[in-house]
Image 1 (cartoon, rainbow, N blue to C red):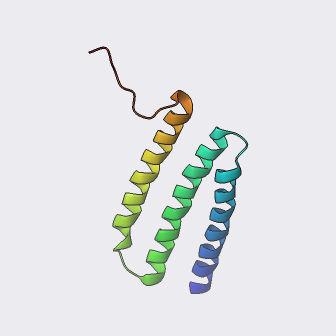
Image 2 (tube, rainbow, N blue to C red):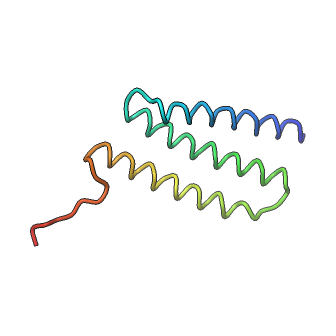
Length: 93
């Protein structure tokens, strides 16, 4: 069973390396957003697998934090690509 878990960890790490390449070298910004979101999902699954290997539930809070940060990062990056800035300021006041 532990060989299967470590093989899964290795596959996830290799996929994260490929996604990091796509994040840096992406042909267009939408590919970079998808790669950023996929890196977040891969990181969450990696921490989940390591939690199973170590046999602790402490990492579950870290998984929740990573999910929230990944969601916020993806939304901010998408908004930056769409409008050019993340926080819009209303100067009409």
